[in-house]
Amino acid sequence: MTAIDTLKKLSALFESARIADASKEAELLVTELLCISKVDLLLKNIELSKLQSDELDVLARRRMSGEPMQYIIGRVEFYGLRINVGPGVLIPRPETELLVEQVIKMCGMPRMILDLCTGSGCIALALAKNFPQAQVYGVDMSDAALKYAVKNAAANSINSIRFFCGDLYAPVKGMRFDLIVSNPPYIPKDDIKDLQIEIRDYEPMSALDGGIDGLNFYRRILAEAPQYLNAGGLVVLEIGINQAKDIKHLAEDAGFGNIRFIKDYSGIERIAVLKMESQ
Ligand SMILES: C[S@@+](CC[C@H](N)C(=O)[O-])C[C@H]1O[C@@H](n2cnc3c(N)ncnc32)[C@H](O)[C@@H]1O
Image 1 (spheres, helix red, strand yellow):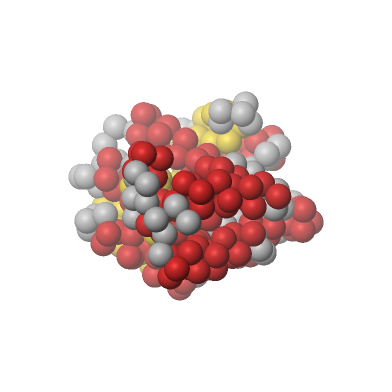
Image 2: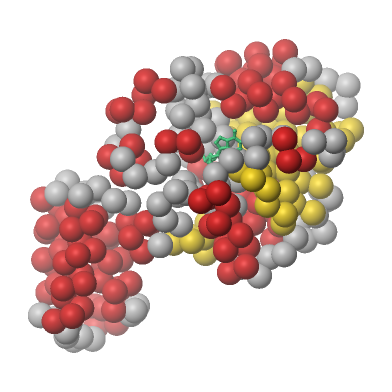
């Protein structure tokens, strides 16, 4: 069968499996498998070998059983970087690119940056690339995630990040930072069962579960942040839907007086930017 006929067949199959963006995902799978561009797929009359057809069947079945496409192809694009992903690490999201974009826009020249809950290392990598003078520290509890983070730093030729395995601030005790960023787990426990299958059944629970009200990590990150911040330092957090009001209270309790939120492209308050009262 030709690649273009395969594409049509796969798109229909994905549509019947109710996969959103069925034709886009089908196209991605075919171009990835054949290592060809979209233009070549559409213009050249490429014929699939039996081996390639069989391989595509296996990949398509994985996708239709709910596995995220990013795990199947093993990577995702994040802020212009190629980030390797797979089971055990959260797939970086576009909302998180907004955090990076805002930090780059508002921070002058941070020298010490801490990325708590670094996962694949996507935030740490994007900031290290854009702040080449900075020393970046990435912390995560998951060995599996950190393996990806280390691999991603090497793959992107970034060597100004030190990754540590540990519980939030534990590995950087006694240090001070100009910028602390985090996209921690923030889904309320009871909401996890309602997430789409790609997330609920495939992405690591430890990257999602923010406790009963989703705020467990913000409580700890904010309460301890003042002792890890340099004067004039900033905390920038990604937050979940409807969490802004609670985060504001938690930040005020921790002594942050200068608090603002930035909305994402859907109008949801998504990024919290926090500075201490006296600064
Ligand atoms: C929502 S993911 C964010 C990953 C990445 N920063 C991103 O934006 O794609 C949260 C991460 O927090 C990590 N994590 C969970 N509990 C932790 C803890 N107590 N200390 C450090 N990291 C933790 C998880 O392993 C996961 O990688």
